[in-house]
Image 1 (cartoon, rainbow, N blue to C red):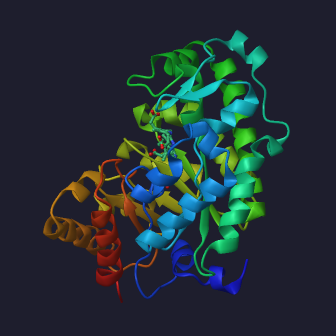
Image 2: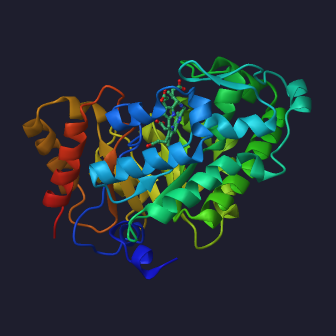
Length: 344
Ligand code: 1CP
């Protein structure tokens, strides 16, 4: 890694070193709320769009430049890794799986990804983005955590109660662990290759794990997430994010990562104490706050910054993704506020 990247505001914060101000990026920053995204995206289905490295690279770079954020996130999507495993993926508009896995028997038609070059469009995008990003701006790669990927593969789409997912987990733990093992090993290959081709760090998204009780998370999920993080190179930086259930935070920490993602349901001061001050944190403004007027946004942004008590190791972000109908001016204003009020 170049010294500019190694000493960037973002990676220093990942290592909990002091910086001139608080770094910020926004989950889903390269998305539908940006007119520049809409323009590039129009005329393509979502999957076609994901598989066009030139277009995916363009929206990644656009978002970083337009917002002035301290990191770029690769434009791609979580469930696409399921395709080379044997799942039929479509978007209408969220991800839909045509042949979901419902029983242990279905494992016969599902394989672990052997050749990760099935995802070569992602690695092409990474290379294109890295070429054109400013020298001190890291590129974040990502993948779904094993549980969140499993829930798409089993439910066939997003879900409210995760009935099929939990049923398989409770009724056939052998099949469950076998499936999560295959997912985890595929995720490791995907993340390793993203790191090799130009990403400086990776984020694991466990967007749906909040539906689990601590006991179930510990038994059915934690060992798999941990196995992914442990299988990455020792010098790889990892952000480990889960949303929807602050009761899982101590277990999320146990599963690993250099940075723990906090959603807005927990007070940042409490959340950081819970995961431990020997790890960096990311978060955690409620995304809906951005619908408010600029004065209210400023007040709540200051409250998040104040809750760090001046400790190095805080990456500002929303507690979850920015909403598609957000006013881009409010997102840009937030970035300015954080850089201004976070200055030391
Ligand atoms: O029509 C469109 O343009 C589709 C909207 C969209 C976008 C912009 C989808 C479909 N995916 C993405 C890109 C995306 N997804 C990125 C890269 C861009 C960025 O962050 O700037 C990332 C990191 C994701 C990750 C992702 N996809 C998550 C985890 C993040 C989170 O919010 O928790 C999840 C849960 C998904 C699944 C998904 N893909 C798309 C949608 C609408 C959804 C979620 C809702 C659903 O399951 O229906």
